[in-house]
Amino acid sequence: MSESIPAPFRIAILGANGQVGTELCLYLKVMGFCDLIAIARSSNSTAFLSRAGIDCRSGDLANPEIAAKLLNDCDLIVDLALPNGKNLRETKRIVGARLTSIFLAARPSKGFVLASTTTVYRYSASLPFFRAYRSMKLFSEHVSQSLGAKRGVPVYVFRLGQVHGALQSCSDLLRRELLSSTGPIHVPDQPSNSIFVFSIAEAIQAILFERTTPSIYTLISNPAWSFADLAKWHAGKIGLNATVVLERVRLTSPIAKGLAAIRNWVKLGLSGLIGHYKELLSALVSAYSEALDQKLRFFRTRQIAALSVNAYFRGLAYRPFEALNETPGIRFPFITDSRTTMEKPERCVEKLIRSLK
Image (cartoon, rainbow, N blue to C red):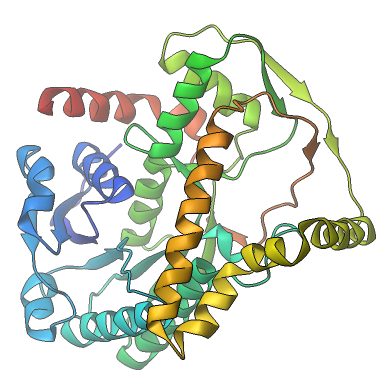
């Protein structure tokens, strides 16, 4: 998988202690095309990666002096961190200050990669038009590109689909549901919005070897995995011979979707509408009273927890399925078909994980 190069590039992975960050570091280690620096705020959170033989650094990147010490010898910076404040306004302030510090502290020759998300797209009329996470990610994209232009640093934005892999919670949840299912697994007959950590490592390799240009990319598997592919693959990983049943999806016109959204609002009533637009209300309220915002957030957290518990016990066999819109955006062109190329490095990563438990 690796390429022979006279002097390895050095990559800094920010937010290396998260699910995606940790597994990405393991893939970069076994693929061997770069020197790797795992960076997190605290040294305690990178203990697992240290045991894997990965060079780890820690410190507050919002401090330009500390950021310079951590980053000034790196050729590429990959930012997977998820700063979080008490509310959206504070989160944006933290994000802006941190990114400004990073770009002032370092000028990586190969560029800066920001991990964003495909949830910035509004797939359905039934979704709220405002979401705090979407707003924060779009803000991060804008700040990164603006700072990159000022500092002469190439900026790549990866809008990641649903990330799967050995350490990813969505993969673990799907496998648990497969194990608990007593009958056939019903899935929509359409492509999924998924990406494997292995493919993210491939995309980083393509940037290092200058196969692509800076832009905003939608990073999902290419060609896309269907929902059936995902279900069968995960079933095979846990030794389950699952029966997968493909369900036709409902094709809904834009007018029908709009009418359905109106019916949904009527059905929800005032209380439901407040819950539906909770993130917009929270952003507005926080501008006037942080105390009231905290009370509203606590109330909604209890509701979300209850809904999550109920949803877990519904299992996978839900119908009918609504057709998903095709994921927008420019696909990253230099990733391979992970169905056929992922197996060998994946085995190496899984072996490494087992050796560290």
